[in-house]
Image 1 (tube, one colour):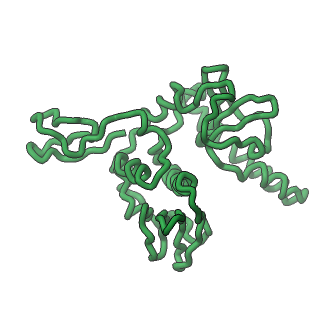
Image 2: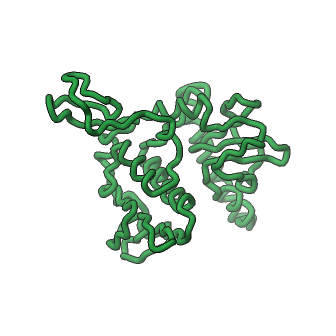
Image 3: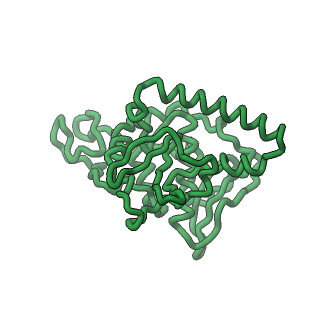
Length: 267
C-alpha cells in the first residue's frame, strides 16, 4: 500500500508507487516499487521498519520503537544487543516487561509485529488488509457474527465460573494467533482476524468457524509447508484482495491516542 508525499518541484500530491510525478513528470525520490514482498510478513527489523514506513505509520505517536532501546514509560520496542534480539514493553510506571530475548530475529519481529497489528485493529485500522465483508455473504453478516460471538463469550465466561471449568475453556479461547491450523483429518485452515478459511486443493474460501472448540491445540504456525497438500493462503486471491482492499494512510493515524493502550499489563 502506498503512502503519499509532496512533489518537490510542483508541490502536487504523489504516491510512493509513482516513479515520476504524474503532474510535472519530475522523479519521485520516495518511489517504492510495488513488489510481492510488500504483502508478506516482515521477518527482520529492517523489513519491519520498511513495512511501517510504506504505510505511513507515525511510530513515535504510536509508541513503537523499532531498532531502539527506548527507556521511557509507555513504549513497545525491539532492538538487538549482542547476538540477542529483545522485544519489550515499558509499562506506565516505567517497569520493563521483556516479551522475548534470544537469537531468533524472525520470531522476535513476529512478536512485536503481531502486537502492532493488534493495537491497529483495536482502533479500526488494518495496515495488513481488512477482512472483506463480501466473503461472508453480505455487509451486515460480519457485524451480526461479531455480536453473536460476544454473546457466546459472555455465556461461556458465566459458565466457566459456575462450573469451575476455567482451565479447559481458557485454553480453548486464549490462542489468538493468525496462521495455519491442521486437524487430525489433515484438513488445513487459516485464521485471520476473526475469520476462518479452508482450502479445497488450491482454492481457498471462507467458512463459518473452525470445527473444534479448542482450536489452539491445532495451531501449525504461520509458515506454509508445501507437503500439506494445499496452496499457500498468502498466494490466494482472498489474501491479495484483502491486502489491496486496505486503504490505510497517514490520516488513519491522526487520531491515534496512545492512552487507549493498556500500559499496565505485561503485554
